[in-house]
Length: 127
Image (cartoon, rainbow, N blue to C red; front, side, top):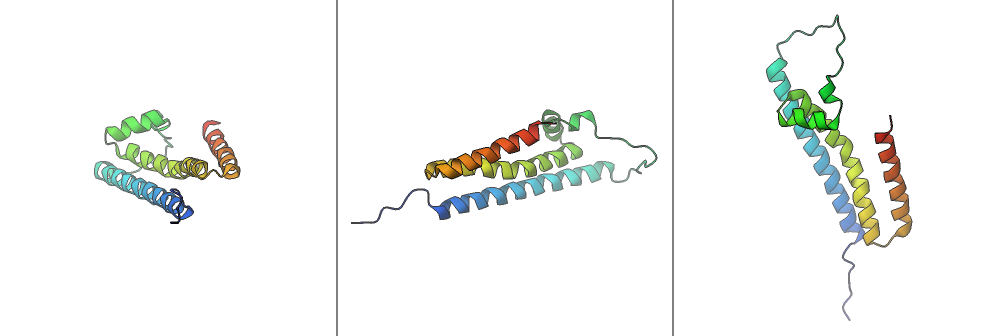
């Protein structure tokens, strides 16, 4: 009788999680690098004004503003988008872990990973 392999093995699950982390970090690095290059091309010769502090513009303090600036190919917007992608990478890993543990029917880890996901969401949405 042939041996039936489960469709979702630990090795396949680990490989998927590794690829998600690699892709997220690589995509983030490319976006930040492009944003940095655009920023330097447009503002690289400007002299910094250290005598006055200027915080982030209002459009770079919300996800919608960051996405809008990135779509307009703003250097600062692309850099911020790259940083958001970097933050989203481990969150995506946790979400995929929930799905993977659910498919493996490992209920203990499903519950634990859901608790981690709720804590991540709370920490990101609370002030």
